[in-house]
Image (cartoon, rainbow, N blue to C red):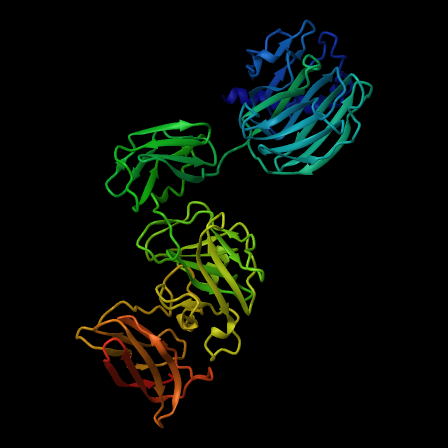
Length: 628
C-alpha cells in the first residue's frame, strides 16, 4: 500500500510538471454519432481524488454488462454504429440506469442525438443523480432535459413525482431536426452546478446556467431516458458517457420518519434512507415483545409482524436498537408511540388553553385536551377560525401521527422550539409545530376544532380578551386556561388567566388554574367552599373559590349571591339556575362591575328551591378574600 501511494505521488508530480505540454497535445473531439467511435476519454488526477464512476461508449455492442444497465431494456438496442438507440414500438417514457455514486466535485458528460423535432412529448433526459433505478416511481433525482416544449437544455430536480426546473437553459437551443449535441454538468461539494451544452456545429461548450442546490446530497444511479410518440420510437441516440466524481460521505444518522398500523399485528416503518436491519431489534411494550419477522418493503420501508394483536384503546411504544444506515450510522431516536384509536365523538376533544396575543420572544398556541376515556388519533384534524358568514377558514392542520391519551393535552404552534425556550419547558411537555399557522386576532375570534373534512365539530370557543383577570392592564403574553375540561367551553367563568408563576402559560402540560371539580368531601355536606380563604392575585395559588354543592335529589333551582360585610351584593353567581344534583360554581373575586373585590370577609348565600316537592334550602357560608 505504501509503494502504491509513492507511485501515485510521483505520477501527480509528473503530471503537474508536464500539464502545459499535455494540454497542447490532448483535446477532446466529439464526432457525428453516425460514425464509429474514435474519441478517447482521459481521467486526470487532480489535487483532489476523483473516482471514475461510469465510462461507457457501447463499443462492445452490449449494455447488459461492463457496466450493467437496468430498466426498460426491451426499448433499447446498441446499433451497428456502437450507439445506444431507442427501440420503442409505441408511445412511451423509457429509461436505463447503471450504478453511480458520483455527486461531489463531479462531472457528467453525454452525447445525445434526436432524429425528430423535440416537443412536449418528444425529449431526452440524462439523470445525473438518482436514488433509484426507476424514475416512473417516486424517485429523488437531478436530470438534464434535452428538448421539450421550449426546445431547451435545462437542469431539473425531481422530488417524488414532482419536477422543478433549477437551471433554465436557452429556449430554441434544440430546435431543428436532427438535434445533435453534447451536454456537460459540473457540481462541486457545496452544491454549485454549472450546465453546458455543445452543438455538433460548435467548437466549445456554451454555458446554459448556474445554480446552488443541495436538495439531494447522495446518489445511487446514473440514467438515460427518452419520451417518444408513436412516430419517434427509434429516434433517440446516446453515446460517449463519462461520469466522474466523489461519492457522498455519509456521517448523518438515519431518521425514523413514520409508523403506521398495517394489520392487527403488523407495523410499517419508513426511514429517511436505506437501512440495515440485520442486527436490529424491534420490541413492543405491554407484553407484546419482539417482532417475529422484519421484511424490507422498497428502499426505505420495513414491515414488522408480532405474534399477538394490538388492542384498541391501548397506547404502545415501539423500541428499536441496533438499526443503522448502509454507512453504519446508528438510528438515534429509536422510540415511537402508536395505538389503535377509538371513534372520536363531539366533546371528546376540547380546547384547553389559548394564547392569542404572543410576546415578541414567543408564538401563539392552541392547546387541546382529551376529555374522554378513549385513545384519540387527531392526525390531520384542523384548528380553524370561523368567518363572519359562519363558514370555516382553511385552518391549521394537526401533524400526522398525533395520538392523545385520556386526560392528556397537546399544544400546537408555528415554532415549538421557540415556545419551549420562552416557557423554559423541560422537554416532556407535548408541544408540536404545524406546517402552517393562522394568526389569532388579539381581541376576539371563534376557534373551531374539526376533523379534516369539517364534518365534525369537536369543540368551538369564541374567546374575548376581556375574560382576562382585570389585574392585567396589558395582556400580551398571557394565556387563557380552561379551569376544568368538564366545564362549558363558552362560559367565561370556565376560563382564567394563566398564573404568573408559570410565566403566564402552560403549553403542553396541566393548566396552572386547573381545579378538580370531581372530588367529594370526607363528610357529607350540602354546600362547602374550596378554599374557605382565597387570594385572586393570579399567582396560581388559590386564585379561585370553588363553591361546591351536593344535593339529595335533582330539580333544584338556585340563586347564589356574594355579600360583603355591609350586606351589599357584590356578585351574582347564579340567578334562577337549574342545578345538577352535584356540581360547582366558581368565583374569581370579581364584582358585578368586573373589578377585583377588596380584601375582607364575604358571605356566600346559597338559596335553592325544588318546585316538584316544595323543598327549600337557605345556606350561608363565610369566605375570606385576601391579596398577598
